[in-house]
Image (cartoon, rainbow, N blue to C red; front, top):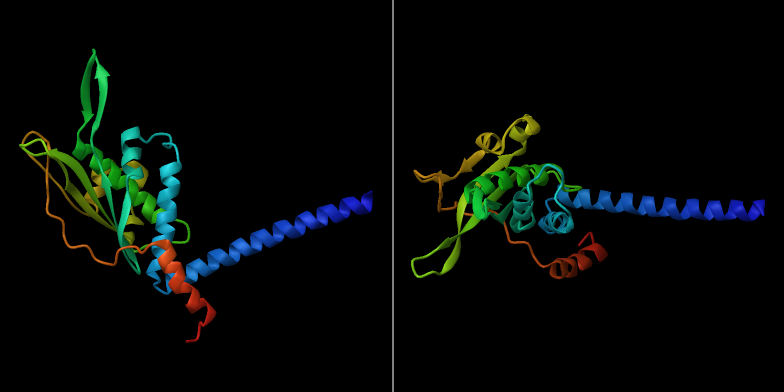
Length: 224
C-alpha cells in the first residue's frame, strides 16, 4: 500500500510538473513573439483579455455603467508597441421619487470608462506591456428624423512612461486623463459634443484562424 501511494503521488507530481512547465514555456514563447513585434500575437493576447473581462462580474468599487462600457471595448488596430480600442458610453440613470434621473452623463461615463480601460490595458493583459494605448469612446445621438447613430465624444492616448509615474488610485478619472493626450468637448450645459478623431495607426486585428494558418508554416520552417 505504501508503494502504491508513493507511485500515485509521484504520478501526480509528474503530471503537475509537466503542466506547469508547459505553461511556462508557452508564456515564454508568447513573450518572445511580442518582443519580435508580432502583431498577430499582440492582438490575440488583447482579445483574450477583453473576452475575460466580458465574462467577469463588475469588480468592487466600479459602477455597473463603467464596467458595461469596459465590456463593450473592441480592439480596432495594433502596432508592435501600441493598440487602439473603442468603447461605448451611454450615461447612468436611477429611479428617484418614481422618476428616472440621470446621475452620470455619457461624457462623465466616457471619462470613467477610458481611465479604467487604460489602466487595465497597461497593467492587466498577461504577457504584454504596450508602450502606448489609445481609447476612443462613442455615445448615441439622435438625428432630427429620429435615426440613432454613434459618434465619438472622447479620445485619449496613454504613454506607459507617463503612466508609470502616476498614483492611479489617488486621482479621479478626469485627473488621470488630464495627464495624458486626451480630447473631449462639453457644451455650455455640460453635454458632450461629437469630436473628430485623429487617424488610427496600425493594422486591424486579423481573425485568429487566419493568423494561425499563416503562423503554422513559419513554425515548421523557422529559418526560411
